[in-house]
Amino acid sequence: MPSLKTLRNRINSVKSTQKITSAMKMVAAAKLRRAQAQAEASRPYAKRMGDMMGALAAAEAANPNAPALLVGNGRDKTHLLLAITADRGLAGAFNGNISKHVRLQVQALEAQGKTVKIFTLGRKGNDSLRRDLEAKIIGTKNFVGKKTLEFSDAEAIAQTIIGLFRDEAFDVCTLVFNRFHSVMTQTVTETPLIPAAAPTANDNTAPEQNYEVEPDDGTLLERLLPRNLAVQIYAALLENSAGFYASQMTAMDSATRNAGDMIKKLSLTYNRARQANITKELIEIISGAEAV
Amino acid sequence: MPLVLEIISPEKLLLSRDVDMVVIPGAEGDIGVLPGHAKLITGLRGGLVDIYENNAITDRFFVPGGFAEVTESYCAVLADGIIRQSELDPAKAAEAVSAAKAAYDAVDMNDAEAYRVASDRLISAQAMVDSISPQRGEKG
Image (cartoon, rainbow over all chains, first blue to last red; front, side, top):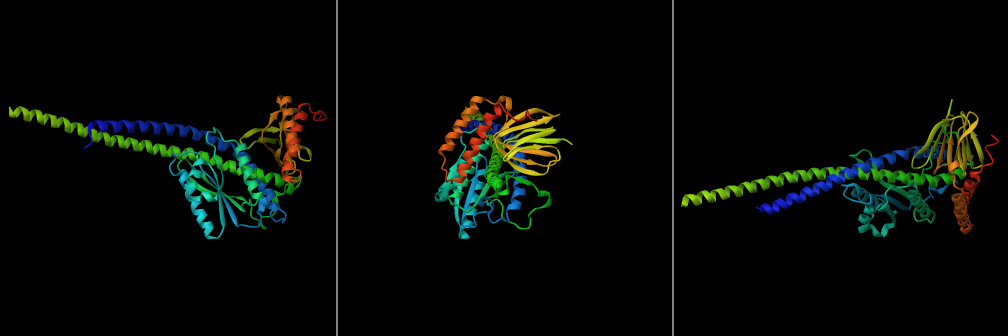
């Protein structure tokens, strides 16, 4: 039986933990709103960009001289996994899910005889994957201490990735990130980045996609593709940050509730022990009086 | 039927409104867009987007480059950012030109991609200077 003093100390420490977790929950909720608004605001650009890409890519995919970023460089020997995680923890399984998925994917690809490389965005994913897959990580970037994510950040990453592609460091690039569905659910999602579209002959020139193009398809695509890559990375980063705060909010909410349960249990034990002490003292007094 | 002009940056929708006509700085020359324009996708060079209402320019914005998608009913300009023409700063523009020039001189001429990026940047910076006291537009 722990003494009254240790019980009291434990109750107090759980109480202060509860205060911290509930404050973190509130902060995460506020940041979630901001992250969601930011993700919302970036959608019109991504949508128009996607429309334009779709119109151009359909016409260009069958062209044997199509840009490599669009149709790939004809090989699929080396895969690059671009894993996006958060920079901070205390968000349940949010970061762990990505690392787990990347590990499974590495195993699956290696079983097919492919070479796998990893590029991590976000500190937590890097920390976790570095433990056993350090040799495969060819680059990493995080946003520790950065308040808001800007498009230029995504653009810099896209430039790095394109540079690696041109140096033939990899043939196929896939983005792995947490898609934000709702506050309760974020799912690990894979999006192919390079090649942007597998050549398909049949969806060529749908009638509603008869755009005039200036200067010409190829030149414009060359400018559009790096942009599109940056837009996709930017969108994924925003989804990641919204998902992270949502997941942190849920994690902190259940931590607060758990702390409440624990306080209840400890108080019960504390009160029982106090009662027992009082009863014991009374018995001592009464039996002392009787003995006289 | 009005024409909806949207100017969108990757971070947010900057401007969305009905206009009578808009002139955008296409990669191969300025393009005047009226309602009912044929579907068009074009790259943009740096320059001024002129908004016309009742046959007069009501607003002019500088865009550093980007893309535009035109259909019968809307014109979407995808740009990194816009600056109202009256708010362009000559000192900043001159600075951008000299920075772009330095980058252009330093670039490896054999690297077509880097060369294109540097020359685009120089053209865009130069367009910013030119936009401060534009010649065109007055002609209508």
